[in-house]
Image (cartoon, rainbow, N blue to C red; front, side, top):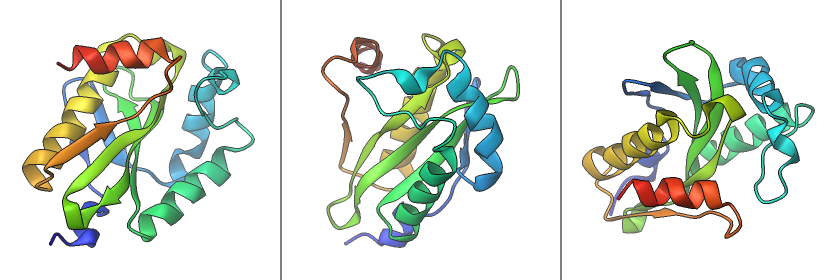
Length: 155
């Protein structure tokens, strides 16, 4: 049996294009700015916090982390140094060595770049190599064609 605390322990993951930082309230203003890049909180087929709801969403994710159910990250671009979105390990099942990667969103300017692919690869690598997961799940709305295509490209 795996230790739940290990699955929900804050960790920083870095690649060539992004740094996944443990989510914190200090990311609030940058995350609000990221949602305003393309007004992405208005998309109907995905859930992105509105600028007004960002603090509550950060607090919700951090609360789930303290319960061992989620490990949330702020996604920081290396090229600009700005935060461009959020991603998480969620539905953590340490007893069965399983996690889901989801609740992910990116500013419009970060979409269709290397950012999403690298984030997913960093999360997959950490899940399998460090956490000892035997399964990682992706879940997205069936109408979110861009997200589904990005997951396929991980191949």
